[in-house]
Length: 402
Image (cartoon, rainbow, N blue to C red; front, top):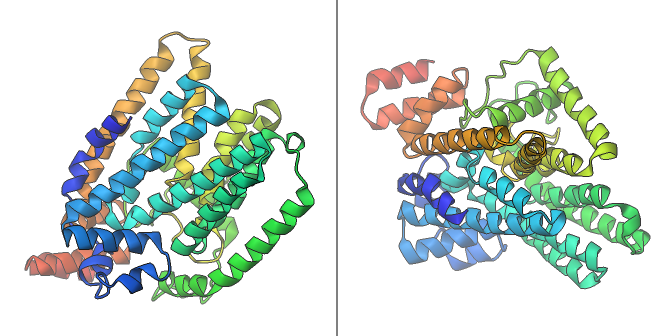
């Protein structure tokens, strides 16, 4: 699995700094200041500081750190599957598919996307600690969960709340009655932690709302319309997981008609309820997809409507779903599931290699983004700026005019 990751992401190591990388590395005056990067225990800042001190501004060093984080997550995910499902074939099929999912490229090949790898590590480690707690009825394992949540919370205030949602999903899968603990005390403890975390996170949430809505919030509201947001975003995420063609930094083209978005959402919810009673493994895989991405999909405008990096952790549930489907098909058909799995594996792997190239330079990134999201003012502004730096003023004017 680790060898495969190096193969499909090897060409990402040679990518330049792009987009937000400049603001966080080359143009960040405190990048070499120890106290600025370590005082808040932000793992993203601390990692950037250490790479800068060891390797300076070399992009390959920052890309290598992202790749290491991805491998660490995959190893944790492998252990998690082995413990929870106790099925080596399912674990291996799931992880081989997870290793080549194209939707991961934004989080892995973009240096600034590393924060989502770090958060995923903390959240899965915290969930793994809770699994040990439930199975061994030993409170000491909860310390792993608590420390993981705190470290994730210090790195990014809103998104580690996904850990609490995933714990609830796991309990639905495992069964509340099987857990021999005082649920009243656990609930009170969880409520206190959640309230304190929410209070501490509020200044960051306000700041994030201002960043996301800067210059674009014509309506003046800080909330998305949930009747548009959830059918649209969930359908788009599922489309990118299944058919990863239009991967781009700015997702602004939602081409599915509204009735189809609602049909997909209602089908998904129906499957959740059905498999909760019929097959808990499928329920867990389906629920994991959007439970992991829930904080990024909050109706408060702390995030973009859709972004590939938000789905990095949730895609683990999608890979598990594919693994379960292929193994169940193998009970009926002998060779078809193997051929289908191999086809998905090869196509996804080739898409990862091609998408890595799109992230290698600013020019590649913005040309690709403008082609896929032609109604994004952000993308046209950035391609205009890029052409200006290349002294191609005719195309720069076209970009800014657009």
